Image (cartoon, rainbow, N blue to C red; front, side, top):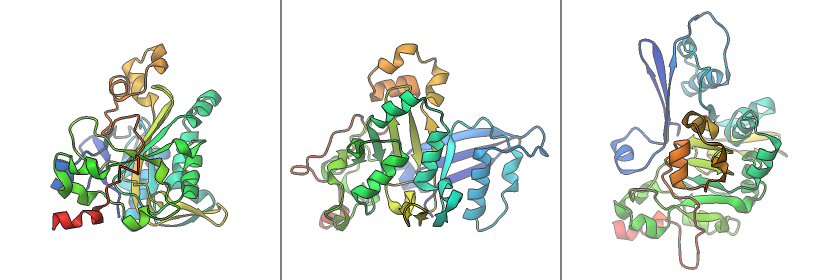
Length: 320
């Protein structure tokens, strides 16, 4: 079970927290993490049977996660003002409409419900996508293309895998000893089908700390795009893999994330009309969209003749 979900009940509201951090002092003290928090009030009429996407997903995830413990207590609260959509992953072979509820296919459906215009979709498909994570599983270019279709990316060469290099880990604030939280196996990376050309540098945005966060960021400008955060690393067990000519989605991890349309952030900040002309960088994302990313964008491709992604087993002797 890899999801990180906190449910905290108060007298008159409930707090839902989705995070990338495990419940350990080490995770919260030494690594950059992503955390989403929203409070929801009690329903005025508890007998009201009106539900929404967020509520139904939360209750279903709770029920499956707890092996059948009813989630009725969650239905006492009003989730109609949820700022994003929950994206769960549930282990199993999912078919028919069920497969669209989980993993990368759930992300695809959530993006469809964001009601982008045709021009926004066209431009978004041409724009760079960044996926930052702390663990990379086995993959090939076909699976990246599968993800790209769900993430509304036309050219998978614009898929930037954001991962720390050996140099960035060794020069980080706590050095190589924190590298145990960064996972990429040499056997995985050295396979002929691994998309090495998509690897880009994780460069910390502020303090020189490593990140345990998992962030998917896809945007054309400061108004057009989306962000997905939570527990999903870049792996088939987490995001799912289509099988049987696309009729079945196989997932082997419990995961949970939240996806938002970018203007769910900037609409509250009176983003001026010409903001789409502003450069997409960390400063403007922080100022106009309230997004304080742990890594710098745009990212830089790894030159694998001189750079190497961090692989723990290659430096294990230095830690013994």
